[in-house]
Image 1 (tube, one colour):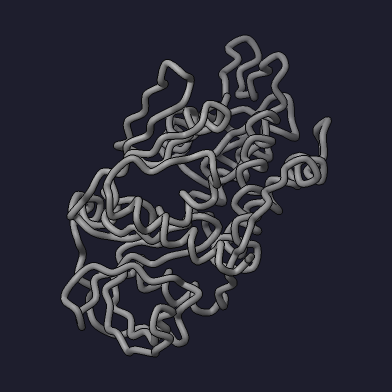
Image 2 (image 1 turned 30 degrees about the vertical axis):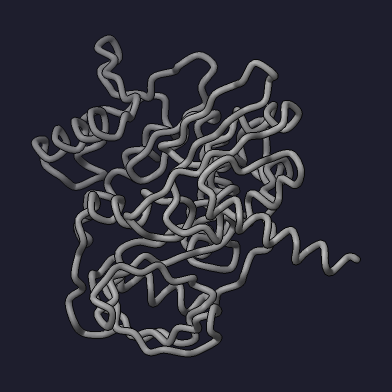
Length: 327
């Protein structure tokens, strides 16, 4: 007898035997898998109930077979039994993920899965190349981050280890050394950010991954912040800027721009109302005006800040500076 198969190897073997033959008897399984009847029953139960394998018992012929489901061409992965439509759906999602960051954290992780799915599709009606051709994600103003930093940060994040980082603050163009406990990676507006507890500042901070000049994994356990606290501190305001002290911005969009903005989600807690003249008033909370100011200016003359006065003055000041450039 050779070395005993582990369970994953047995699952592959069972799948192959069923795919290659119309019918497989219990005795054939026991002999070729070199397992007991009890182990075979457990494997069969797991494959059917947990992994969704369509294995049926044919009482007339006295053996097991793969159920023939009309219109479905089933393929197997470790832990998954997929039809062709499901494989296409998965490949589409993977193509989206790879487009987000083809050379970084996600691209390297999903490529092996993509390659295996492509092999499963070789016998189908549509090629994986067709999926790749038909799914496109276009990014704008993406800032590149070295892959090695992603790998270290991801390891620290999942292993719950602290990181030592050298961070470039673009506001003042200065480098600082920080010891942080990573909490989560966030993909926002075509760029990656790291939410972390900063031990130097004793507070939560968000760091742009592209602003990291150096990253070192430390042999110290990371502090974990409750998800509710992360959301309250980092997600309650507008955009990427953190803060729990909020103001409400009230923006009035022209009837023309309202056709789009009325369908958009600027913030989970926003409130919007169509006016009699078909303009649209959007109310959103914010704690730092910088990102909101940029988004307002992008709308040009199709938006007016109604409240608060401070935000209205900031928009006015920015427009005056812009106007002075083009005189």
